[in-house]
Amino acid sequence: MAETGIMTKAPGGEAVMEEDLLRDQVHRIGESPAGAYAVQVHLSGLRASNRQPNFIRIAARAFEPVLNNFDARLFRLSNADLVLLCRDVPVDEVEPALDKVRALFSEDPLTQAEEGSLDDMFSSWYDLSEPNDFNAFLAITLDLIADAEERRRQRPDSLAATGVPQMEGAPLEPAVLAQIQDRLADVRIDDLIQAQSAISLRPGGGILYREHTVSMAGLQMRVAPDVNLLSDAWLFQYLTESVDRRLLLIVARTGLAASARPLSINLNISTVLSREFQQFTRAIGDQGRDMVIEFQLIDVFADVGTFHYARDLLRDRGFRVLIDGLNPVALQFFDPGLLGADFVKFEWSRELGGEAAEGGAAAAQDQVKQAIAGIGRDAAVLSRVESEAAMKFGLGLGIIQFQGFFVDRIAGAMRSKGMI
Image (cartoon, rainbow, N blue to C red; front, top):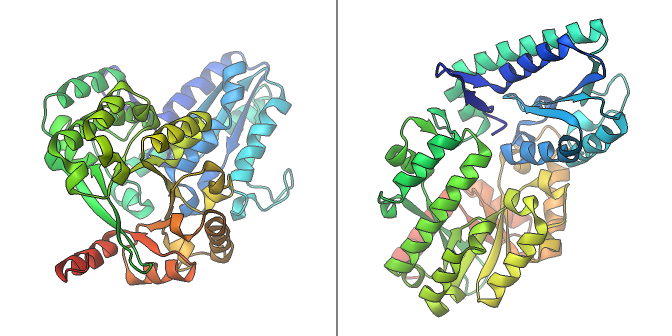
């Protein structure tokens, strides 16, 4: 994950940061610098709300055409910066990727200066074939390493400040993942399933659905207490696919689909297209008509065409589809109405509410209002509602469906009074 840095394991067992790998690559370039250059994208300068791991990963994907077709390598640093090292890559092949990233964060002050002007702090270019540029970039790389090491020493506090889930341990690696998947087949995870209600405040509303997820912190303690399951986003994705299959078995075996109506579960798109999901739908029969399948936005972005196919497949079988993880940054990138989901979940944040918005709250709120107008109030859900203020804010935007810890308390009170 970009916020926490990407680390691998050195032969001696010590953690190696992406910044270390960058330094090594720069030294190798120094031996033959002809045609080499570096581009540093200063995403560390974004507002905290815009440095979410999902959006940094989306930004990194903009460079995939360059990485796939040329001699280039991208480094995702622990401060959220991206560094692209290129050799003999035409500049006009890199600029479109930079333009996409700039457009993704177009409402952030970091991107407001005119491109190429002295005030433009979005990116820096270094011609590594020129000694002065090479030495300057090497010095910057060493500073990045020192800063990353300091952040790693202070990691618990820094993670709490940014809202990134905290999980300690050694980096997740392919061989370790295989061992974890073997263990996962034999351990009990029924008791690790957590539930959270979403409610509708429209007349005759009540419980919209009850979302069931597997606690990753609990799973870590049970199958890999010394491994940071979140340290590699792509390997973690493979792990969640294994968790998906176990969750489907539990829902089908325990009758949860019938007892927790209406039920919502988070799945990967690949899981919905799997044989296990076909077996699941046969096992639950008509109960699928009371179920919501949630997809993470980053999974949808990975292959929109496959999402559309999975969405239609689910609809044909009676399921409803929810897209999770929307916030104002994502709304700059696409129109959620084009996805045709039954529900779209917007994330509450202090920046969105204007408590620490630095002047950007009004524009962010307008984006959410426009998105709600496009999808309709009955499709919009505000998540991470942990206070009355958050709910009042959502009501002010026209949202009538909510989820979060504060909502859980409301649902509990409604249940105790026999209202639901």
